[in-house]
Length: 164
Image: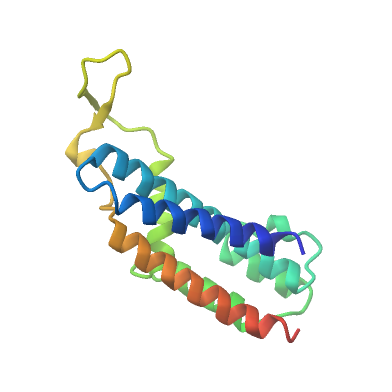
């Protein structure tokens, strides 16, 4: 099993960054960086988890499962239709789900901002994105809730997949 330990590692990194972010409420740039780092690790865990499910069900190319739909397609091609894949597809299609919010926020972070304002006179410039380009609101609380939901889903699915 290649993906299970990677999912666990990314999950741990996200948890550690979130725990650290709680200590920097008076340093908003540092806290935001830690929160974004936690989100990126959570998103990587989410993506690797798709490959973990594909691997557990013995798909020939688990690394090709990059979305819940491609996971479901891979599984269907080997005549497997597990509830885990159906749940992941449903979560990804529900725009209000934690899964869709993690996906949307991670995609937003991968985009270049439209406008920047310089906020530092130092040699290393800190750039603030205009408020209208700031993207979805990220907080320690929202990331913790998403991470808790991810952990619950993974643990519940792993219990069932062990029996495969």
